[in-house]
Length: 67
Image 1 (cartoon, helix red, strand yellow):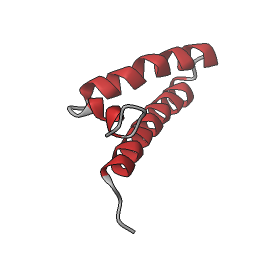
Image 2: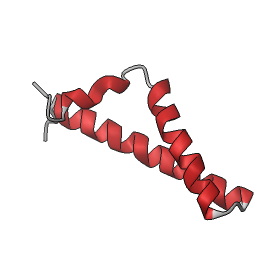
Image 3: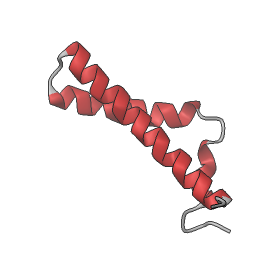
């Protein structure tokens, strides 16, 4: 099965979200912090992961504005 650019961009975005979620869960377990603080950390980690990705504008590749 050959993946198109739209599929690759969607998978990459999904994996980025999974990585941010994993970091949040690991932080909550290791640091034994309250769930509210873990959610707050996740809200900060996810945009940070997207900002560090050099091709983070890829959502236009598979969203409503896709060509």
